Image (cartoon, rainbow, N blue to C red; front, side, top):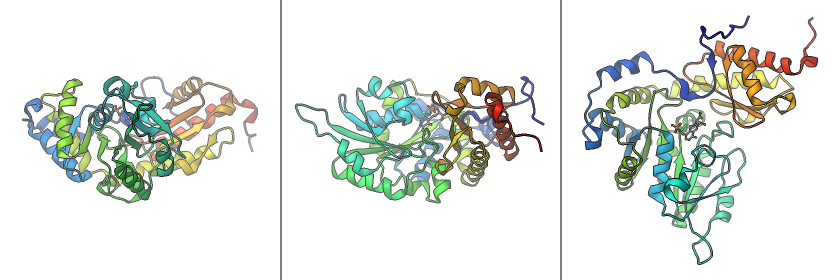
Length: 362
Ligand code: TLP
């Protein structure tokens, strides 16, 4: 029997891994956090988080920023000059969901590169690189997204990252990794995050997604780049004062990550296997490598908003990511039982739009 969503019962929230609530341990650490003014560099908890993050990700320094979008924005600014080109994947977060920040703040043009399942390959990148001339602007940065959100949480093979970095560096270009979910990539591949990020010039990762912290991301790179990044963060209004109360939750999140992410991935697998049994949906289970499941509802003849509405009535929250595709994201606050409920709700919603397909009772 499905738990009905009437506002009183907590729905199963699969809209994103950003929706997690801080754990009791995080709240306790926040309450006890030692703080200072971080714009003066005097918040001991922020300083500890930045040092800890830099060590985990294997870079000289890291900067605590309020959001992943700000981390990516600053990274682009620190690697480029006005009027240059940035190569990125056609459905990358930077391209589709950051309100053209690359143009707005850095004055750069995004040139998209074709990919398979969100993963860029060096030969395609190489063809798109432009050398500055009186006729065209030069490419100076390559941005890769690991895991790739809109491709369904796909993971870059390590050798692909290394090839991209080697090729870019030979040409004098920089590589930034939008590693909002790089810990998911690590949990799925078994490759430590510092190895994944070893050859990129900068990496941004989010505390507020799979790691479950309430707020914040880290941008990591060379000491020199991060010193510069600190100025850009201030320009963007991201200079936070007693931010140690947020950093404290981030430190807790970093302490107990990887094992838990594996269960998020198992829950996503459970979801996709349940959906694969519904022929009215388009499901590519090979894409589901981490905590994101994207599936098509184009055969149902309804909009993603209508489909979301049906799910909501059945106690499940999920968003459309295009006019034909829905996304489910597993995270700390959803259990295996919640995912089973979601499969049931999705099956009911599918048959609601295609009643002729209801299987007969045995
Ligand atoms: N992604 C959000 C939405 O904006 C789509 C989500 O729910 O998945 N890089 C990647 C790969 C991301 O998925 C996101 C957020 C960001 C950057 C930006 O992070 P925030 O939301 O902290 O600015």
